[in-house]
Amino acid sequence: MKKPYCIVPLCLLVLGGCASAPVDTTPVWSEQLPETGVQMELSNCELLGEEPVYYTLDRDSTEKWREKPALQTKGVPVVTLWGVTEDEVELRYVENIDTLYLYYDRVMPQQDLDYIKTETADGGLQYRLDTVYNFEFVITTPDGTDTMIITCERDGLTDTAE
Image (cartoon, rainbow, N blue to C red):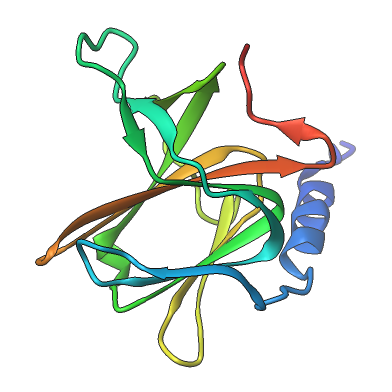
């Protein structure tokens, strides 16, 4: 009996090619987050803007939309966090519908598929966002909670459902 061929090695090769891409760690944005005191840095991309975005937790919400801090990027953004542990960071998808950003709770970003997480030599947590989705970093420490939305654009592609 002839063995069927599998395309998994091809997929791994494609993903592996992404994983080995060099990362430019020159910061394009850096800030100490106000509630947690965590240092957050953005690199390996072009910063298109720092305008807050309108956000809601669900489509049926009767609450007013609220503004959330956001960084608009082009390229393959890398977010580095200092002063936080892995279990204090939650990464979420955020869907863009026209000018509203909506928490997408049906599925969560998958490590090594949507993002690559590493630890830097100086103890920082580093997240390379490998897909053209919008991500929300929710950082919760004993001091409080901060959020930051990273919108991604690459090669003319965006995560917009208009």
